[in-house]
Amino acid sequence: MTTFEQVLETVMELPLEQRGMLADILHNRYVAERRREIAADAQVSLELFRAGKLKSQSAEELIAELQMNL
Image (tube, rainbow, N blue to C red; front, side, top):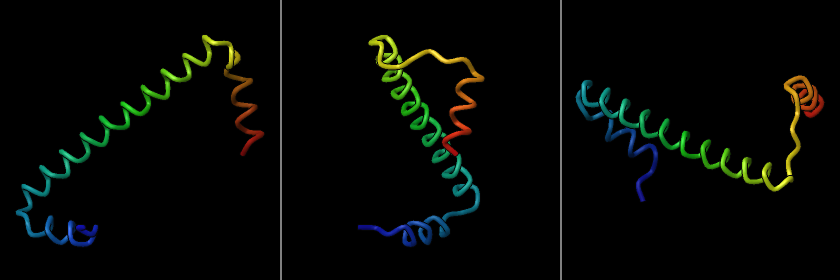
């Protein structure tokens, strides 16, 4: 198994331009994966809401609830 440190060392051996391209690719893939996660979470929330397991709240109510839990 390759360690994180080994990956970093290998990446640092690449020319600067290729490191920039790799950084862009990794960032874009990270963003795409997070979007998929957010969409999946939203789908579950919609299903729960439609099933009556979540209640509708105003923004003020939600903010107050969030502040209570901090």
